[in-house]
Image (cartoon, rainbow over all chains, first blue to last red; front, side, top):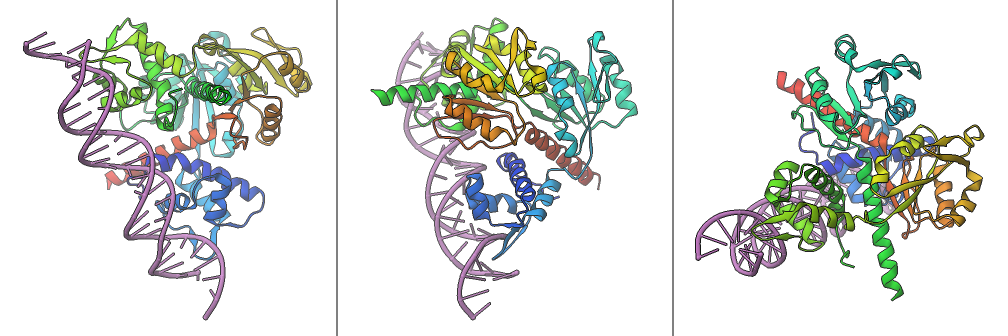
Length: 217
Length: 217
DNA sequence: TAGATTGTTAATCGATTAACAATC
DNA sequence: TAGATTGTTAATCGATTAACAATC
C-alpha cells in the first residue's frame, strides 16, 4: 500500500540490493551500514538510505541494517515471497535456455508450460515439462493458473501472441522479442532487448578506442 | 571525437531509436519528424531532438529527418559500421542460444569461438563453430582478433575468468553472470542480469494486484 | 513567401547528494 | 553516556520539457 510514486530508478536498483544482501547473507555477515554497503556497491550511502526509506525504516541508528531482515524485506517488496507460475512461449534456443535455468525456481518462479508452433518439438520434454503446441495455450491457461508469460518468439509474431495472451487474462509478460508491445496499462511488460544491450557495448568499445587514439596524439 | 559527456540515459536510448528507424526503413518511410517519431515511441519530441543534437544536426528545418540517413548515422555512433569478433565463454544453454542467434551477425557481430570446461562438449559444433576447451583460450586470443567476450558461466567462476580475459587483452565483456565484475576502467562491461529483470516484473505484477485490491475496497 | 520543423536556449522538474538532528 | 549511524530535510545537480528564433 505504500507503493505510491516510487520512481522507476529506485525499482531498477532494488534487485541489485537484493543480490548484494543475498551474497552478504551467504557469507554470514549479520549487519551492515549504508556506508559499507555503499562502498561495495559503488553507490552513495545517501542513495541507499533514500531508496530504502521509500518503503519504510529497515535500519537502526547506531547499528545499521540487519542483513537477513533487510534481505527478507526487500524480497517481500519485490514480491519474491510469492510463488509464480511461468509459461514460455517459443521453445527455441532462448526459450529452452530459460526453461533450463534452475536459478529462477529458487526465487519462486516455476516453469509450468512451454509452447511452440513447430510440430517437431511436440512432446519433447525440458526438465520434465513437455513442449505443447500453441493452439493448446488457451485451454492450458483456462485450466492452470499462469502468472507470467515469457515471450521468446520472432519479433513479427510477438505483437499478436501478446495480444492473445492478454485476451486470455495474462497480466505480466517477460518480452524477449526485439519489439515494443503496445498493451493495456494493466498489463505489465518487462523487456529484455539483447540486441540493444550488445549495441551499448559496441558504443562503449568504440568510444574507448577513440579516446585511446586521441591520447596517442 | 564529439563523445564527451554524453549522458548514460542518452546512450541507453540510442539503440531504441535505431530499432524504430530500422522498422521505418523496412516500411519504406522516407522522412519523419521528431513529432511523429515521438508519438510512435512514446517519448517527447523535445527529447528526441535533444538526444540527437548531442551528436550533431541530422535533420532539416521544415522537413524533419531522412530516415535512411539518420539510421545510418546512429548506426555509426553505435559502432555498427564496424565488424566485431565475439567469443562465447560458457557453452551451456544460454551460450548456445547466443551462438544460434543469427540476428547478431546482421549487425556486424560474428561469433568466432565458443569455449567451455566440460570435456563432453569438446568438438561439438554450433553453426559451424566447434566448442573448444577453456585452456585453449589464451592461444586462441593470441592468434585471432577478439573484440568482445560474452560470459555465460556460473557466477562463482565469472570474476576469475573475467580477470583472465582482461589479462589476455579483451576490452569488452558482455556479462550474463549474476555478479558485478570489478575490472579496470578501460574495460567495458555490459551486464544482462536476467534474474533482476524478472524481479522487476514480479514487483510490477505485485503492485498491480495490490492496486486492484485497493480499488475493490 | 508561408508553413513546417529543426536546433538550441531557458524553465521546470525530478533525482541525487549533503547535512544533520534524532536515536539506538 | 559517547559513538555510530539511521531517517529525513534541505541543497545541488542533471535530465527532461517547453519555448522560440533560425532556417529549410
